[in-house]
Length: 208
Image (cartoon, rainbow, N blue to C red; front, side, top):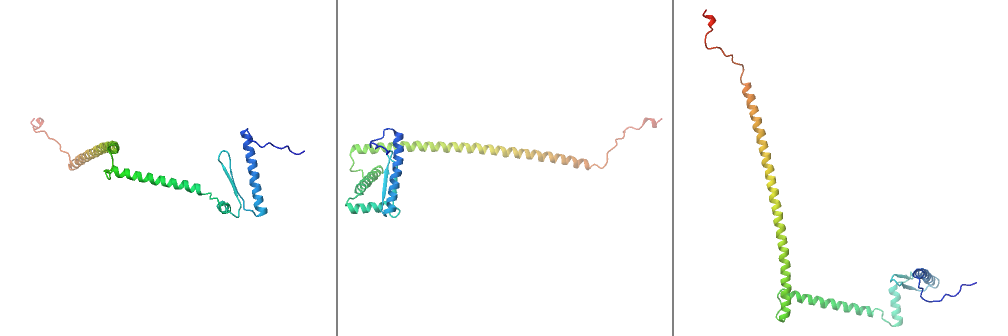
C-alpha cells in the first residue's frame, strides 16, 4: 500500500516542524544539484527559515549575482532599486547630520553666531558652561593626582636620605673603632721592654 496524502498545512508542533524543514530543505537542495548536473542548468536557491537562518545553493558554473543580473535582464525588473534608494537616503541623512554637527562646532567656537536668536545663544551658553564645569573638575582631579604623587616622591626621597645618613654614620663608627684599635696596637708594640721600679729609700738592713 502507498502512503496516504499528507495535508499541506502549518505543522503546529515546533519539533516536528523543525524536523520536516530540515528534511525537505535537504531534499530541495538535492533536487537542485541533480537538475544542475543532469541538465546543465544554472540553478540558484535561497532558503530562509522562520528563525531567519539562511541556506543557499548555486550551480558550480555560475554565481548568484550572475543569475540575478540575467533575471533582471529577462524580466526588466530592477532588484536593486529599492536597496539603492535606501542607501542613498541613508547617505543623505548622514551628510545632513554631519553638516549640522559642523555648524554646532562653529557656534561653540564663537563663529557665525550673528544669525542666532536669543534662545539659541542661551543653549550654546549652557552647553559651554556645562563643558567648562566638566573640564575644571577634570583639571582639579588631575592636579590632586599630581600633588599626591609629589608627596609620595618627597616621602620616598626623605626615606632614602635617612637611609644614606644611617649608612654614613655606621661607616664612620666602624672607621673610628678600627683606628683606635690600630693606634693601641702601635703604642703597645713601640715599648721594647718593661720598667722595674726601685725603692727610693736605702735598704735599712744595709746600715746594720
